[in-house]
Length: 258
Image (cartoon, rainbow, N blue to C red; front, side, top):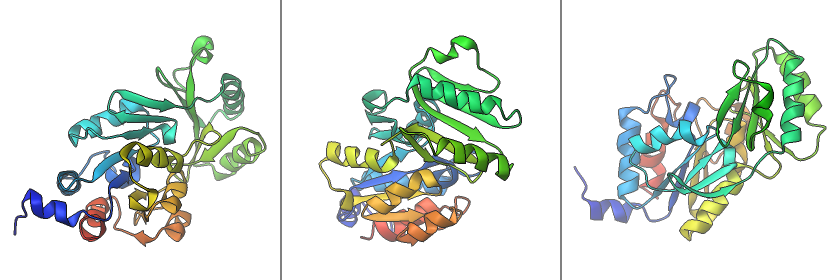
């Protein structure tokens, strides 16, 4: 049976915000939104639920997905380093000090086999695109990637000793570094304030450690079937994997049936 707009509005009573991670969550392994996920995200939006992309990606990388989904709602990028009241309308930005970026880059240079990248307000820089005046930016996030668990562990152990950093990951093989206090949880709380709702009315869906605090903080925290074990353990529910339309399952089973 095809429901009309009035029926969908009646279904979406408990949850007013749906915060969706992208990679490993809304996107499949080819960085695509499946037709099923897209359809159910559209239905949630039509029912009056504010669907918020909540990602570690930068704005320029996340924007095409918001446009594909025709979202005119808040966005959270670079793990909460930027909050957008709607696409292209910046609400809040928290930067990472230049001296921290310099030190993080110096560590990366000691590990020639480790990939690194950094988001500035101007774009993304990485191991293949880094020159001396790269430092002269306004910075948001730094990251390392390697499947060498020993090297990754050494880097993590070193930077854990520093003050002023928020550490997370978006896969078991990376480390993501933001300014202290920056998290998707804090960003979702601010989005709730903008929307005039409470955190108990929010759903957060994700798969990695950069989703963990948000999953713990909201009314319904959802881990993907492919999520890291620590994330699954903290979640209220575990949905299908990102190759199984897990986001659509959440919307069907919880968001539009609550």
